[in-house]
Image (cartoon, rainbow, N blue to C red; front, side, top):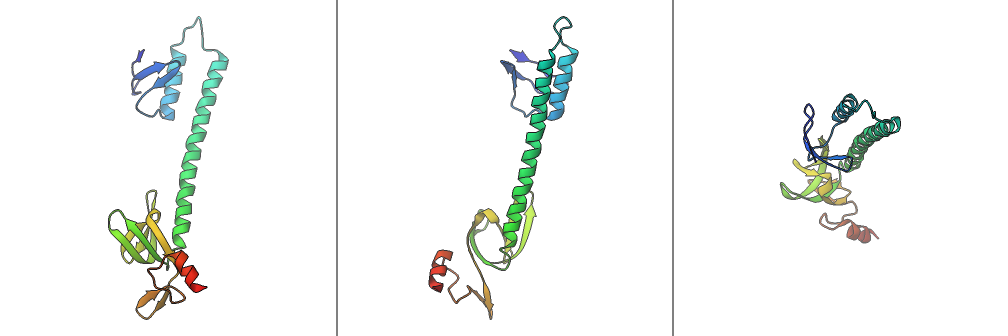
Length: 163
């Protein structure tokens, strides 16, 4: 059964009691749909209070899920930023989709939208693209891993070399 749009709501089809659409329904659209349903209900068979309360409960659940999603997204960004800030001054190796192989000492950390970037010798590397991390001790003009282990050795090998 086809359903026509209601004041800016997208059209879709109804399967059972569920409106199917390619667009996401916002909370304002849900409330508008609920009010329209109440305005156009059959006066001889009004919407039962149980059905109305069920729809309101579903709406409140939807709102809470949206808030939880926003909060978890912000928490994830905070965790990425905290993890990235521990890399400042450390030697990292990674593969950037824009720049290819990137390695060097992390100078700064930047946030752009939901992505956290490391400034590695002037090249931006996403935290998610880091493949190796090692502590750095600066000696003269060249950076070396603490303990004199060459910078190209992965962490597992560097830990074994210190033994």
